[in-house]
Image 1 (spheres, helix red, strand yellow):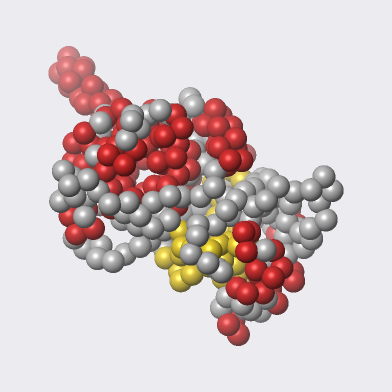
Image 2 (tube, rainbow, N blue to C red):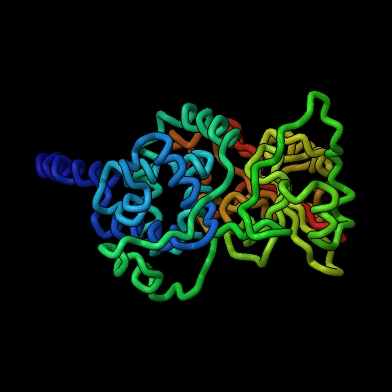
Length: 362
């Protein structure tokens, strides 16, 4: 028994340290990927981080030098992770998806996710409120920078990830009708006369039609990522970087795909369900319990089987997220390689809501 307690005394600090400190290898990998993506034109992730670092003063006097050398500035690196976590809505699952989209090494993703979620777990409310205020004045990413000579060798695409090649995952493309970055949607008039019915969008077939309907400043082209986190062609975004952001993909004769990931939103979505809705509402709309992939695993949080309910065969794909993941005893019940019934009592305690929802028209 005495040996057991000695072993616990020795191993516990190591476990705790693993959760509260990044290895230099992981920090270097993250720094290299940020440096690489910062060189890509209109990169949405590093553009967001850079602007927040600048506004907060965490970038020092030269934002470019900071972004290309995060591994040399632990304070700035922590701040970059904080704003990346904020960019991901302070949601661990979405944060992991964002890290993967940056092509980090597989053994870097979960240490970064654990470290960041632990470090800023008490700041979630403040970070989300700050994000709302930030997006009111944010006009889009300003990236595509050239690294200083002193760091050029370590921040080149090849050095950052030799296997990445010309991969431009997670970058934001240019406005449909020009070469300038998309501007934030213009402020609504006192009386909002815009239509928020989405069904007509299933009949749109070209980006030019979207521009005609919503205006050039309110439509942006981006690389599309499906709800599983995989790159999936290109998409057009209406009212980008606002609560009313809507992504549309044209799939020819197969119909359009409309994806919502922001809330609250004014759009009147099919079946009356949208991002931010609670799991209880989804159970009610489907008319019976359904099955969900275990969180933080392959296709984590995505509805796997509607079990013959009202949404079965309706071309609706939904990803759920856990808002209250702070209790490991509860959260561990719904994570990993398993299928979970949507009426499992623990899901209510975990405050599960719709994170993203995609509708495919015929």
